[in-house]
Image (cartoon, rainbow over all chains, first blue to last red; front, side):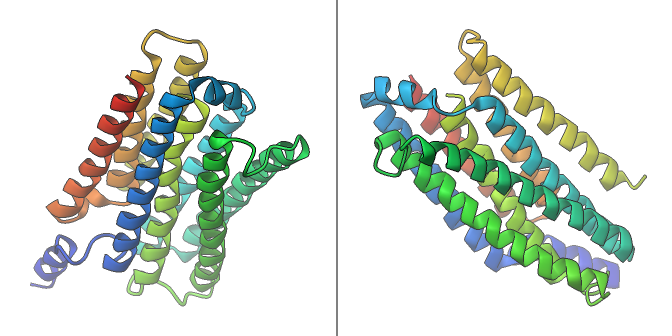
Length: 195
Length: 82
């Protein structure tokens, strides 16, 4: 009976992974970045030379490395919650710690890229390409920064066994938020670096 | 190893492969590279949503929503780039 209840709750429309609130946030955020990406490509159509020249200022190898870093962080977070469900707090906290460190590495690489742009005078108003670049990657940067803060708090809770296999909701919500950062980056990385 | 952990690792390897392939295709100016990049991006989005976010265990609505996001991206980007 108990198993049946859990199963029905899992597939309940109002109970998506991480909870309904974080999913409303995901819908809003992903849609915003989707629309921004399409508007960016619309402007590209009319300013193709400016966009091609601007794209040369970005290093796709650095972008690729940063994408792998963020995706690996998401992988560690996804595995962390599986260990927590198995009541293995130690392993769960360890994986989350490495996931958070990779989050910091992502920001460090991005920060280095930002610094290089600012140093040669490429700011928010440099041209339309970089207005989108600073706006979209900047917002994403802030999301990752917030995610690191959130997951650091959760990490402490897992270590102190405040969270366990019976009290997992906050952990699931926070990790879902982190995956939202992955999803947004997956969409915007090719727009700026590859296409 | 737990089945879900094994699946996570497989999906992670797939994601890394697709990320690298996207860059290789785009950088080497492979013919119609942008189509491959958009397809790979769509697969990456769905792989993260279904395996890492565990949308595969959620109600049909959330699965549909994930596909809807990908469809908007896929169609929008291809129309703009054509």
